[in-house]
Image (cartoon, rainbow, N blue to C red):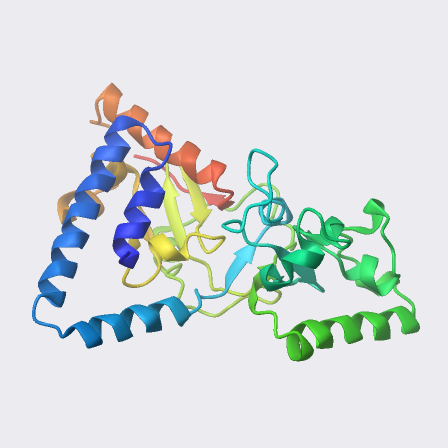
Length: 286
C-alpha cells in the first residue's frame, strides 16, 4: 500500500470519529493520486517500484526505553506474532533481530533481551533481568567492554541485523523549556542530529505541549508524508479543525474553537502521548 495511505490508516486506528474522518480524507486523496500516477505505467514498472519500496528501510528513528518494550515479537494477546518486530539495543544502538526469531522470539533462549538494551547483560553473560536497560556502560570492566564490542560486531557484521535507531536517555531539563516560534520552526527533522540520537528533532506543538515525533513518527510526519505540514508548527488549531488550510496552519489561536474542536485537539494530544512521542517543551497557547 502507498506510504501516505498506510500512514492515514495507521493514524486513524483507535481514534475518535472526527479523527477517523480526517484520516479517511487523507487516505482517499492518496489513493486517487496513486491511481493517477500508475494509470499510464507499465505493469513491469509498477512491480519493480513495489519491490523497491519493500526493500527500502525506514529512516533511523529515536526510541525511549519505554517505546522499545513494544518490540518483542509478541502481540497484545501474548502470542508470538511475525508482524511484531523484535528489537534489541546494544550500547544504545537498536537492531532488528526479527530474522533470528528462533533465538529472540517468545520461545527463544534470548527472548529476555527482546525489547531491551542488553548491553550489560551480554557483556556479563547475564540472564538476570536486573542487568537489562542499564545505560551506564562505564561500570563495565575492560574485559566486559571487549565482550560487548564483540557482540556489537556480531550483530552488525556477521549477522547483518539492520540498525533501526538509537535509544535516547539524555535527561530533559526540569522545568521543560518554553519554545519560541523560531525554535519550534527549526524542528523540521532536517537539522543537526543531537549526540546520542539517531534522528534530528521533528517538533509538533499541540495543546501547549511540544512533541518530538522523531520518536517513531517519521512514517507519518517525515518529509513527503501526509502530516509533514504540521512539523515545526503549533498544529493545535489545524488539528482541532481537521484542516490542512494555510489559514489554520498559520494561525495558532485556539481562543475561538468550539468545545467539540477543543475536544478533538485534546484527543490528538492524548494520542501523541500514547504513541510515546517525547514531550520536550511547552508552547504558549493563544
